[in-house]
Image: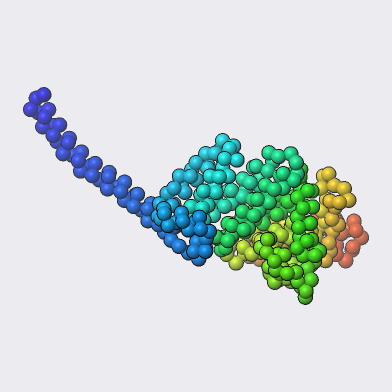
Amino acid sequence: MTHTTHRIAGWIRRAALPLLILILLGASALFQQRLHEAQRRAAPNAAVQTASPRVTFITMVLGGFRGLVADALWIRAARMQQEGRYFEMVQLANWITQLEPQFTEVWAFSAWNLAYNISIYFNRPEDRWRWVQSGIALLRDEGLAYNPHEPDLYYELAWMFAHKIGSFTDNAHIYYKEQWAEAMRKALGGPHPDYLHPPAPERLAPYRMNIAFMQAIEEQYGPLDWLRPQTQAIYWAFQGLPFADPFMRTRLQRLIYQSMAVMTLGETTPDADEADWYPPNPALLPYTLRAYEQAIQDAPDNPSLQQAYVNFLEMAVEIYRTAGDQNTVQKLFQSLEKYTAPQ
């Protein structure tokens, strides 16, 4: 090797050393930033301080590294989701929620997996119902216990009652409705609780329901049938409203007025017989109109809310006209003209 070549090689080594140091310092800074973020997420709060012994133990042992482990498991869970490995995801998601109880996305992800992805693998309605119940319980009894101010979790729970149980997209929906109605009948004594002589709190405790809150909801939304899953959707969506930003508030309100609309207009299903048919309930109509108008008032620049209201009014006109209730039809036309008249 020539003298010139030696000089060039030496210069490269001297130049590379500072560059390597800069790279290592940058990597260290990124790691330190990630560690600080993990420590912040690991900081104790009221929910974690009252957590199960397992969560407390994991918190003490892993400390700030909990977040790093949870993120790695979350990436793995996302890959399993893409591969359709839903049963394997159950245990993995359980580990993540034990590591990071405030990781709200995992609670919603896990509950959806149980109630939607796994339940449909079973043919018998009673087997499906167990998985749907597990998804509901995971959100209601655990996710919201750790995250009582997270509107996303209230929305997900309300959606399960409105959609998974309340709609007819799952061919076991009639069984779900029957099972839920029977559970509420045992807890409440019937579709309408006696607020002067309410049921014992321990009868409502398994469902995380509060009789005073139920009464407050009925004062705002009218005489509700608590055997219906739509009422349960209203119950949980309403609880999330105080914690919601404008976007999430609109989503929660949409669940409320859609559930009110179903109970006001009556309900039938493609495979309906007398057992799955609910007649229109005119007593709820003024409360449903108020729910729509409140949502529009809170988000006046959202045209989809006004269109949803117009759709509801048009359906209501047809139903009450068929029933011969001309007074109600006239009131509905007045509201319809307000939202369809040229501006």
